[in-house]
Image (cartoon, rainbow, N blue to C red):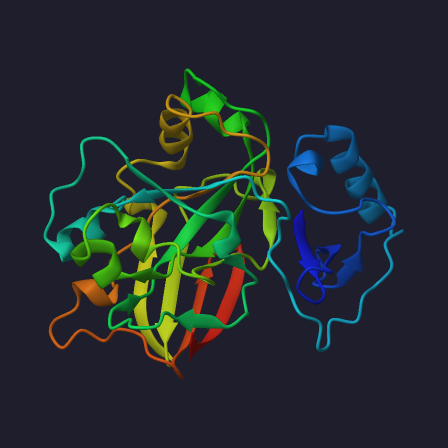
Length: 285
């Protein structure tokens, strides 16, 4: 299933994109799309049954904002330097263990919402990423099979980053990762049954219609199953938590000088095979 939330910010309603590409209203079946729903097989079953029976009313998508596909996100865990080609372009050795950092849940916005360039920023960068959405409480998972069984689905994430704040201003990466609007998510939460092999997905990103990133999750240093298993050794993952799994080559930081960092007025578009497409215009904060 392709689950999404539509409407003005803070007032989104749950919806489903059916196999014919028609937007369907879920508000008569469930109250929202969040961790509680993803952890409830009966509720997910009601959605499937209603969709198969043709009982979901159609929504007019014209002019309708698409919000983040998930409400009340607990935490956004991020994996850094997780693609072989990205490590090569930035001149670093692939890490021996996953690099883990966090984004605050309030950085998450809709897939087509405006991204704000932070005040004082000179190195705002783009990163298309596969996001994992957790569907069952996970702690100390013992195998890749067990890890995948705890995944509810996947989504497109844009891990916007300010490289000067991240690398040159001291401390950890958090200052360059947690600026407002720095995690567009969606358009859909695609349930795991529709993604049989998360290591065989194409990721692409364009800036002002110029292709910048064209990668594949096959290049991940630590695949999805290992990321979930590994992270569960250090923290409890709850339904509705999100894990951003890293970006392939092609970011501004890895380009020759002068590096083409983002500015107000730029338009970024990104997509992952089967998971949908995003578009953001950048403005000054």
